[in-house]
Image (cartoon, rainbow, N blue to C red):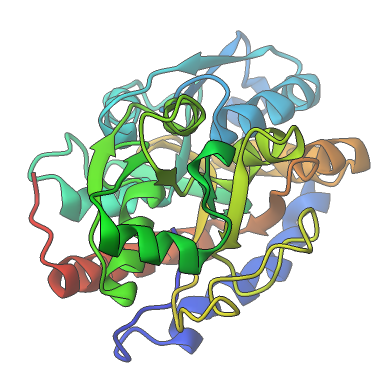
Length: 337
């Protein structure tokens, strides 16, 4: 979850610095595999497993499935998606951290992994020691949504409801953007709501659709199809700008909430000791895939954004996310579980 802190010590310039590095990451795309060691040129010789630590139908899962087919064509071997949801993404991340570092097990990584290092006493992995972060590939806004039957049509309505009765919200699990983001929002608004964790973005959206909770803040791309169909009402976009897919929906800033900008980002990581030559070829293949107009169009169809970061910039994103999580936990009094 990339966001602006309410604490001035975690400022806008620091939080945006790694985003501006994205353009530099495209330069490696033309390198190909010429001159790489024989080990890299012989890889892959069998199918590759790409672990998505979230449920099928979530934003990361959809993105990985769009990319995996084209990536398999680039590498000459199938790239098979394996969903390993649970514990806010920790179960799947733990599996890849312990996998053989041979290039045949990939991880769809992202902002929740950094948050997990502070949200959990024992997440089962170390985000810097156990992984080589190959590249960032996508970003999605967070969208605040309610059920049409709730009677709520604005952030002001939600605030009023919280002061007249007990309300609750769904998240995709402790430490996920849909959890941390809402807690940050509640703190900024000085209101309260009960947290109800689920296993992933699809489940949290279903909880709102089934009126099991009052509201949620899922990834934009997961909520958007339901908004289009009239099954969810969007109250605000938690980004710095309005999302072009829902230009009529105000940002939190426009709705009166200052300095709370939230997004979820993701990319590709591998076990730490994966050979550099293999990760270089993998990165080149990913650059080729993400430069394809059809792939980019599909990735952005539901309001997400292709955002390519090289290894250094993507690793820096994890560092900033971890520091921000520390600041946010102290501010709102969250304790590691």
